[in-house]
Image 1 (spheres, rainbow, N blue to C red):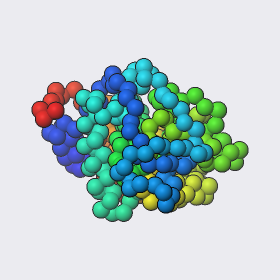
Image 2: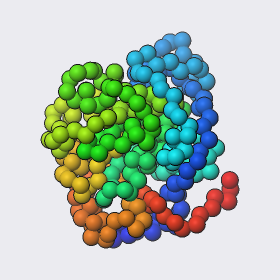
Image 3: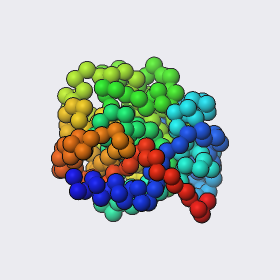
Image 4: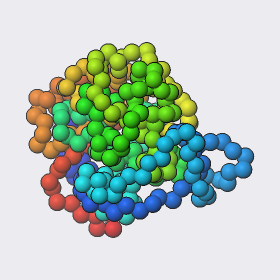
Length: 285
């Protein structure tokens, strides 16, 4: 419990985890050519920092609705939003630790429901995708209560559900939400026997494929809450590291202690303190 207390106190003092709403929507600048979920090698491409058009050959590109994103506090696609800096700071902290250890897969969870873990997952993935030398893939592995699609406003008939039942291949289920270097693998409906599915050889192979296909890719998995079932315990051994989202006032001390115990064998990067009401200011900006 001392670890979580120290992490929360540090988060409060740094004031880097606030989330607010009402972002404007501005087109991002594309930097390199993309295939179904990452960069395509080409001898004619300029250096990665040179701006070129983005092309998706197999992944469906969908333009998201600005008003919908505003209502659901999805803000990190817009660099000028006043709260974007919080996710950029979180991104830098996460990527530094992952790079030091050679990790490329990150799970995001919480002790209990309504902590905001899915929103943090989406905004963090968008912030990572802003990096010119990275691509980000967000996977909705909360198979009991998938919410990535609804928060983004994705309306699709094909998703991870069909991949798990061998109805479509992986590329068909992915979608680019109109932002360069970001791909989403949504889950459209709850999955029966979620824990057994997550611990299956099929999912193990899927994780390996997602991680290894592109060397610049960071794969983020939105997982269920730790205490919801044994889903998180089933999948974490196959994911490099984990970030826990704790909402201020939402989880009890006992719930946090139990969550930490269940994550004791995982590589815990840290704790995001969400929904904190402490006034903050960013004087520089």
